[in-house]
Image (tube, rainbow, N blue to C red):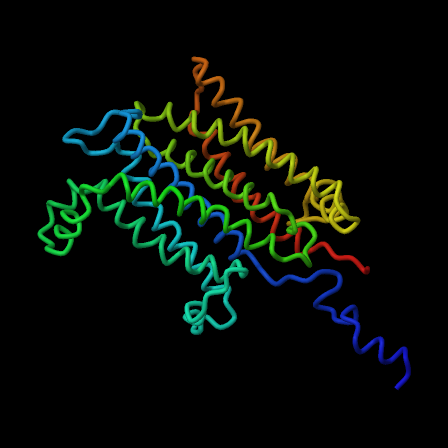
Length: 331
């Protein structure tokens, strides 16, 4: 066997599935990351609102008989639902879905997938419990003994449940970014700030969703939360881009592939998606609209801003996942 032949056999560059690009994750994963991040953001926002209301009396007025405001009740209920839907997309992506139970046969603290699977174990029961507690008045109308027993047992500990859930929500939000950043072979993903970016984006998307669902008198507080989250997200995006450009040659090349290269997604260059639709339409325009509305300027279509935020948050996940996989080097 010649040296050339041996080189050809061991080189992955002869594999047409690797060059010009390698796609392992398809559309299911960005949707899972988006829904998971928004579910975590909803849990963070609703939990903090519950604590502020119960401990300091800060927040929208209760809807009578100590029942939390409508947006908190809806947001608490949607959090586990959205994550469950996201898990369906993740399940569809698994090569061997029937063996998903194997994640729970071991604990690997250094593995983001192992850590994430165990965080989900804590997330669902506590998120469902919070949803039950804030909707207790509605649930007590049903003659279900086990539900009444659970509510009676935990009713006096809602603040503790909310405090724990706030931390679990942060963990879920960060995990959606850490899941990618541990793949050091993907230069675009290999960034320590990616977890923070996905967390803030998830909180912003959650605030935007609550802004759509909240009654008129509750909207200002969620508009303020979203505006502040967008500010932080803009700063985090800047740090993410700057960190990539000033990193190694591979990191710099991967970042340029996203923000200024000729590579395309759906026939449109990544740079147009990133700067025009994500940063421009998904962050800057909604921030301006929410600032104008807070300043007293009448916005004819107030739902435009939160819809743009939600669209931009989903687009961010698609861009990061697809651009990270489509970039390759021959080094």
